Length: 240
Length: 311
Image 1 (cartoon, rainbow over the protein chains, first blue to last red):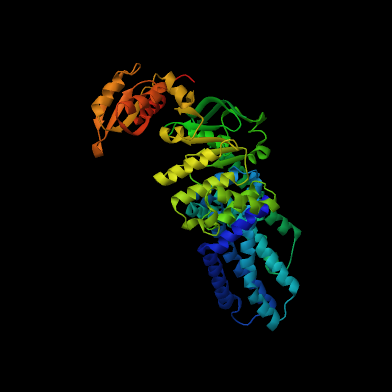
Image 2: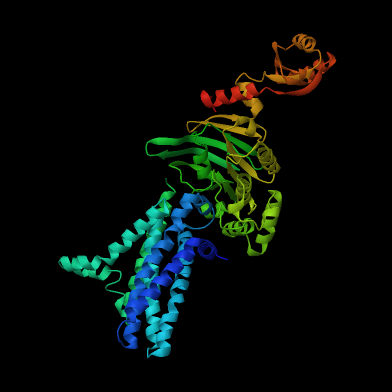
């Protein structure tokens, strides 16, 4: 088994064997269910509109869950003193980062897909397309991956999990509110801030059932940049 | 086999180690001795590829460890000062995980784990969660993870840290058993502990190598090698007089201890130890113990760590 898969499997087991993973999963499912009942289903709406609102409301808990899942990835290793085990192994730093990220992404994906009973209820009782369903979940997974990437970077910068969550959340919120900056700045900065906004510019098409290559590329790019920066942080730590 | 040349590591303006150079031959068990903060951990972390040096080279069989680390890392086993353990895993799972990371072929992993567990006394704990283990067993798992991929070189940073006397003896026996199969560099700040385990000592002080050699060589260079203790019963004064009469003996002091015995501290060269035993027995002593004076090891350590020598 490749070191990436080995590390990913260990991370996934770590979530499944500790209370943290289950608490995050339970919290997200409860919040998603409440939001679905309270807001997505309120009033009399068309099925497609209900599904669109479901994905909109599910995106928030997905981002928060990503930050909480990522906070342990490196900060916990530093707290427990287990990072030297990985550093001393014949594994590249980028493989360590990728393995940890994929383990967390697998858990987040499982958690996200566990919400599928809600859209499936809409599918059974209403008229929605499977394409809309798949596009929405693709969007949630891409948004979750990008948030997880930012959380992973935060975790690599911090010594404690609490600080890691704060740094990760700060990075995430900075990218979320970029659209606000777009409204108060002049071109070309306004266009730049609008383009890098994590949710506002790139998630709505997915929640409406549309998949644009530029949105997919954007989320993949954010994820890659965050993981690349994390790798650089790990490399820099070898000097200190 | 391991050649360290002019190795330095600075944290800002402070030097953790300075121009460290030494060589360790294949199969040797070498002790790395120094007070806390002397630079032992920094050196071992560099040799274990966890940390990069500011300058200098480390070669393993002629290959530079710093420019080709991935290939060489698989030949090194490293136990950091705090054993790197994942508490949610069982001992068997953890060792299998580490073996996989260290590029052991998948088909050989189970066999290597079993073999390592037997060697480190962990065979009965294969299914035990690491979080439930005592400190001594955690330390053993730490050694096991360093051994599981059968490395050529083993770096152990304070492996006896926090162990009770029984565990300490077991750890020393384990390290001694590695001689020949592995090249071992083991750090400690306790001389008696390391002296019993190692073929040779490297002594660091304030980040610099101040002495190297066997315990006897270091004692000789420091003008020590003159403290022997005999714990005896019977006619103590007669025994002391007989020992004083032996050529080469400079002084004998008598200190009564419990059980009607006395400890005779003899200021004499090491080579006289057999003769001291013979003379004491001939004078009617019941000989309970004859060994190097604890004071002697202590003064050796203090001289090495406290004053410094040229390497």
